[in-house]
Length: 135
Image (cartoon, rainbow, N blue to C red; front, top):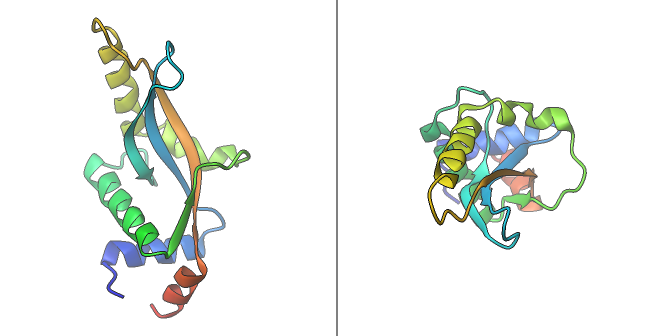
């Protein structure tokens, strides 16, 4: 199976860390709880200054690893370590999301007026553990 350098690095990172927190950045409506739009999915931020390009590259690699069956991504976790997500709240990416939502909410007929961060974790699958051993 062909893996890009980004994919290999993420597999090794997940293998080395106790937890590999990720988030999905969403837009919500205070008027309609069913109205949800995904702004960015499979987001991994390691530094508050991470650029959009860096975050999107990691996101694409995580999605690819998931599609290859090497990584399991879970956004249904009800309990998490709050410190795992500090970097996300301090990031330029989240700040941009919040400002964008606040600005667009001022427009007439705006549907989305709440930024939302859905917390999750990525873990290696059995197939992913085998792949790491071959790296």
